[in-house]
Image (tube, rainbow, N blue to C red; front, side, top):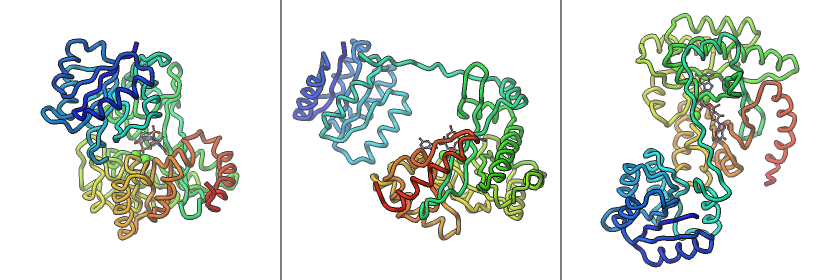
Length: 402
Ligand code: C2E
Ligand code: CA
Ligand code: CA
């Protein structure tokens, strides 16, 4: 039996949502016109509330304080934010709920569409018909990952990057995966932190680069000449010999230095600025591309952009998907694309998930796009087939078909 609780000081909203939930066959719906009372109810029978709808703007305890109290009480049910406030506020509070590790199912503006209610009920943890399998995150030891690098268990996947104006394929980003003998395909967020903490970044970068160059050779044998991007942490830019090593590896594989882009993210170690500037300048002198990855997040900032001779700016997916519908995102992307143009940086947007993202980025003058709308990361062997299919879709995109 599913139990929902609605917290809203506005009686009309309260009644409307109550009726919608009853129509969606939620068996028990409780309502509270203030957060304090709601909290009392949750405290009294926490395990009996599966789903809470909470309004943000309430006199007395507001929605933000209510979330904080729910988090303190380790509330494990589903949570839906409902608000008449503007979407920026709603989005910030949604981010806050996730930071509190609450199970946020949605953040909705009033009035709530009935079909959204039905979807939400389906998504409630433990509701009939849905079993929530709690994947227990497995933590790997540095030695395990080191062995995996040594025994060749890391494999490169490649995700296409295409030119927005012409829909031509420009290059691929190399994304590493661990083909684990027991656990299957393991994604980088599960082992990159171990690599960085264990001082294995250089070994990883070498393995990924070697694999990418092997694949690039195979592609060029069938006439595919693609710009290769690989991810490196700033921690990789501490050995003065790095630019020469990379240049030698490229020469040995017959790939021009201008065919490689290093996507750089902030590492964990405190960096030696002198070395960083020395190394990055020498990479650029050799015409190896340098991209500032995840631009706009964390430490990937204007200060980096000022000092390091980047020639590409990679817009993080957090700023990209939804850009066609969200005026705030659009303003941020527009400003960044404009700045990049002034600085003569190529812009690549990652996280392009639908046609509206694509159209908006093209209209804003962003150069390249990458994301699920175009193609998912794939093994090297799959790339030629994807390119053949893309030529068909490319025509549709250019012809403006939807
Ligand atoms: P990143 O460099 O920001 O890479 C983009 C991530 O976004 C990839 O996740 C990719 O699969 C995902 N992605 C691509 N298109 C879309 C989209 O349309 N929507 C959404 N929601 N996601 C999309 P992945 O492969 O799991 O990689 C995660 C991170 O791991 C990367 O983030 C990068 O920081 C790191 N990483 C991956 N490979 C390497 C590597 O070889 N070396 C290092 N140092 N880090 C790596
Ligand atoms: Ca990247
Ligand atoms: Ca990113």
